[in-house]
Image 1 (spheres, rainbow, N blue to C red):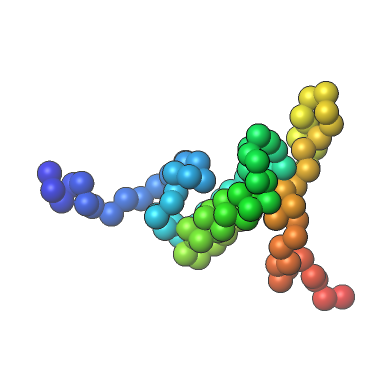
Image 2 (cartoon, helix red, strand yellow):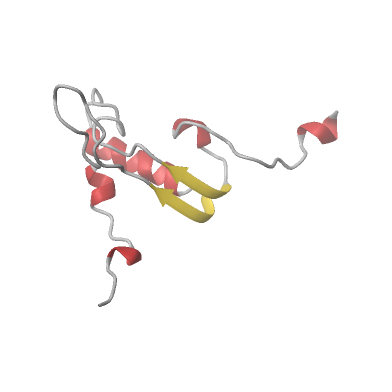
Amino acid sequence: MFRKVFAGRTGITVSTIHGVKGAEYDAVIAYGLLEGMVPHFSDPDQVETAKKLVYVVSSRARKNLHLISERGRSRGWSGDYQPTDVLAGCAFQYDHVPT
């Protein structure tokens, strides 16, 4: 029983950002990084909380990190969701393709 509990795990883990604290994965795919979702629209300190949450999810990846902020996701009557400002402000190497 002891070996079974501490045996290496394989497969896919689906979790929330808060649920992955302290864990590490070879690949992390985070989606729905949109204003009003990360952080929640009712959070009083939106910018600081968004920075912390993006850091938490980003620091869980050992090899591959995919941060996804999709377009065209409807909020209903108030238009479409926009990428979280923290993610939009990140400058990734592949954002600037040499011509």
